[in-house]
Length: 197
Picture (cartoon, rainbow, N blue to C red):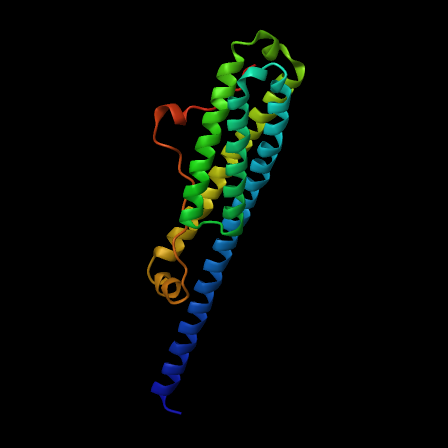
């Protein structure tokens, strides 16, 4: 074999090894995104499980406010469905956007419930309501931390798949950018849900 043939074989082997390494890195980063959303999903499920208990506990005090209670449960069900769709496709922009919209609706419904609860001293004093509110607040904090970890994982992946020369492998094998969980733009929506009863 000639020297040029050996050099060509060596360069081809290096290129193949580099491409395999780039592909494996992208797969690993994509899996990290799935794991990061899994952490969010655990906390969201906990949140979704707490909400019906909170509504049931508030129902005896708010019997004439059925529309508010039903809107909270409907928003919770919508958010849970959106979360399940994202869990099956972490990082997909359309699923993330639907989840963000559903969570925004749920936050608004919970906000209305808690604002309404301010007018009912017996409801505010109920031990079960206070305990559920504290658990919900703790869960909200955990969701916030998990979202940050998810967004960090998406940023690492998007940087890896968008930089040259790994971009060539990403395009060749269909690695597309993942969507981050964005906060809403409204100043009112950016405020944390207050759960003080």
